[in-house]
Length: 271
Ligand SMILES: [Zn+2]
Image (cartoon, rainbow, N blue to C red; front, side):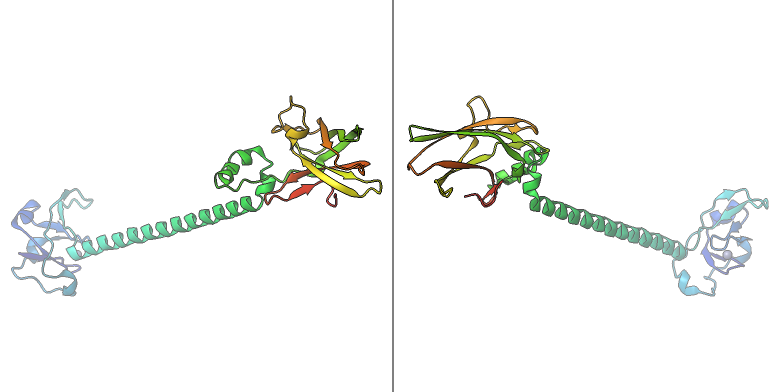
């Protein structure tokens, strides 16, 4: 059995149970019109203005008793199936496209984050020697460089050192002993520098030089790996053998090693 909404002319398959429910009074699920299904009953599927949207499998009426304003105890007709499916498809499409745009957004964010990380790593690599003077960098990222076998030599401020007092003694014309007090005049802590000593002849021309590590000039009670705080001083004692009697003087310089084993010294043209 079929019935047809008189307003929108949509057709519904209808059962006897539904017709008994409210004496045949129903509400069209498509347009909301209340009508008496019994008045529009047919054995054959009625002709509809848009039969292609209804199709062969018409939805069955599902009775639901409600109290309406008009006092009409009516059976609500479930909307025609094709419409409902279409609605489902629509909402499915929407959620799918929302998922897609969410994915796109997540992808863009991930891309930006990756780009920023690359820039940070690039910056840290380029400025690693300056950054390595900061303990927080040296203790973290610096470890990675050490593990990779490419330890970073921090670009310490070699110009921060001042020779405050320097005295030299030639003993027995065989050894030169130099006492020097150096002070850290920079704003930050500095590690003990390398001390370069050059011997000069009586024309003040250099005739030989030697570079000493901190453990070669520091008194044994000082740890050569520690940093010297700004404003602090230390005493260096340098003793070198004299291979020639021509040496009549000496010059001192302080240096730090760079990553490529070159030296950065306080006085660049020092020989
Ligand atoms: Zn209708």
